[in-house]
Length: 110
Image (cartoon, rainbow, N blue to C red; front, side):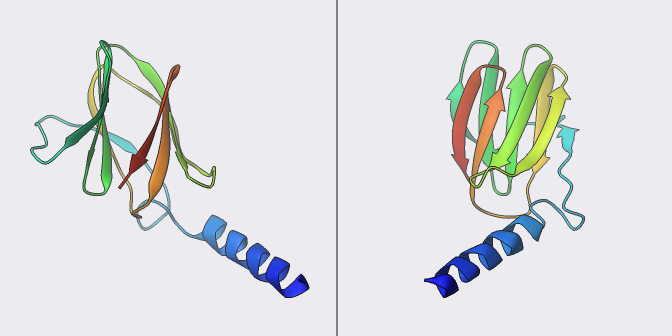
């Protein structure tokens, strides 16, 4: 039983220390000037749309919004305020992410 707990703790530490985005482990949003053809809509509301494309999350919004992206384990990947328009967050790891934009929350699989 102690070995299982030790392996679980070791796995949790390794996952927490592994980079989620890019080489430095820092996720940053960038403005998207052109439409991404292979993007798929996850959720669409009157003021906001969240889409996915390979290794990235795209947010289209009509007004400035606060956004937070978490791994499925609860680790914060990004917490920023996005300007109106299209923004993209490129993540370096495939997996399931939780995206919270204002009062809207959704699960995304990349």
